[in-house]
Image 1 (cartoon, rainbow, N blue to C red):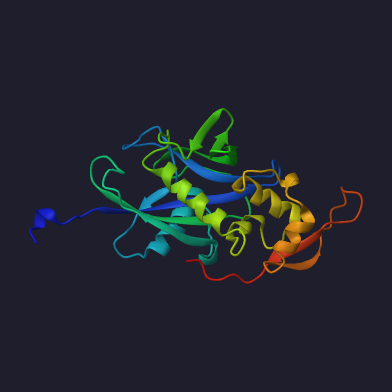
Image 2: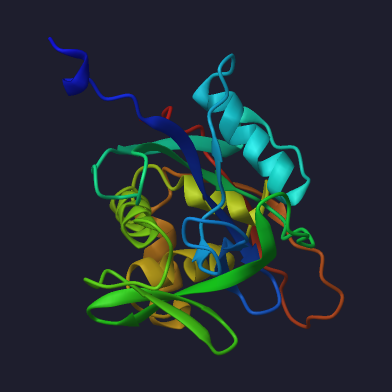
Length: 243
């Protein structure tokens, strides 16, 4: 085969980093404000270029360290998909190996190399047709034909959301954003936007019954600021390895 027909693309690592705000009780997604071309001045998912002597898994963890200055273990990160559309980037072709990472705390953000800003954007159901990310007055609709996010990052987010939503009833790795233990109310708050409803609209007793094989009761929460019976605490049962 002639060399001119062979692709020699860059390989980038793109990471959908999830967390949960205990203040607003909303899931959060990390976006960075790009400093340079292409898409200078656009918001985007954190990404890095795969180095010659590192695996994609190692690069995904390095990306988190470089962009937000924290170290995570391999169990907090899972592969999502590979995006290869030749038109996904202007100029030189670049493939995106994508990951999802679940952070149990929201660290204070400081933009790293290649970014002028980094912020948490609240994830919610916009309406029956789609989802959105929002930070103050900045809103990015997802699942639409057009997006103000850089590259194909709106599509990557849409695939990530679909992956999580489809696995809520048998492999809810997204609950890792709540830490090692959580209440059923917190779990319902995480589930709600994917199901395009509210946590209060999800019946607690039915939720516990239908998910009992996924959650293990480990005790009760100790919160002196609340009156009445303390809520029970749960942890995730051992899950299958993410595909």
